[in-house]
Image (tube, rainbow, N blue to C red; front, side):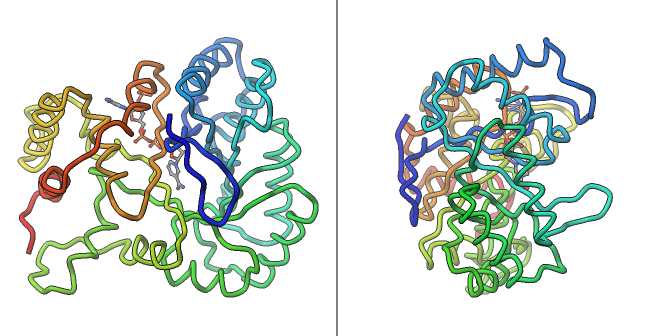
Length: 318
Ligand SMILES: NC(=O)c1ccc[n+]([C@@H]2O[C@H](COP(=O)([O-])OP(=O)(O)OC[C@H]3O[C@@H](n4cnc5c(N)ncnc54)[C@H](OP(=O)(O)O)[C@@H]3O)[C@@H](O)[C@H]2O)c1
């Protein structure tokens, strides 16, 4: 697995990120069962064996049980802490909304550290923008967490460029990434590249400017749910819309021609964008993790990238 250094950090990470949201299948406060621990171990072991060292978490995944499970596993497997890059997120507050107040962030990080059985997070992301966020208070909280040695780097998730810019104007350390939804099942972040030229009917414009902004300031982008979206990986079904059927056909034909899985193509499509986007996979099946890990060997041509894009949007370009 190829390693890259995240800009503005010394962190050397696998080009593929393993997302831990599904390692404990159910969202429940019930204690982990032995069976869940064994299943979690199989998935995480598969990711490690493929050379993945970058793991994405959030305080809320499985109501904390996903972090707890991961904490068990890396200790049990005697993995060295410095062989792992652990990223977690905070700010989604079940029952309330979003919360970036200092006490909530501080408590959330402490909870994540305890569950993950570690003294520090390599990266902390703010999960979804808190509309009531106070940027100066966040800046102070980040500085405290950094000074306490609890977090090494900070970033955001699901932030618009304007919000990212506004927060960065108050925070002294670089916000090193924006984690967003992007893939063949959700092409909005590149639809905005089409709007300036007119002929805009049908252009889906949510998420505009995110990739452009990250490229401008040299900040990395992480793409979550790269294979989810309308069941693009599933076999063609009678109930599929014309657009979905056509996308599946294009994907399956191209995958056959290239001798790779459709999941690998979907990841290669994300990574082909010049913003240098890192996909985050979430499958728990070892064979799918192994297959996905080879995505870096597949380089899409300019023509192939557009063919998939046009099929995904279900409409010709303007
Ligand atoms: N920042 C955010 O707001 C946010 C939001 C969502 C997720 N995330 C992060 O992103 C990570 C990845 O998200 P994700 O799990 O949605 O990503 P994903 O890899 O696009 O989707 C995984 C899901 O797709 C299924 N799948 C994978 N390959 C398949 C295939 N070839 N055929 C059929 N089904 C397939 C998996 O089922 P199997 O397990 O059965 O293979 C699993 O249910 C999460 O773990 C989390 O860390 C972040």
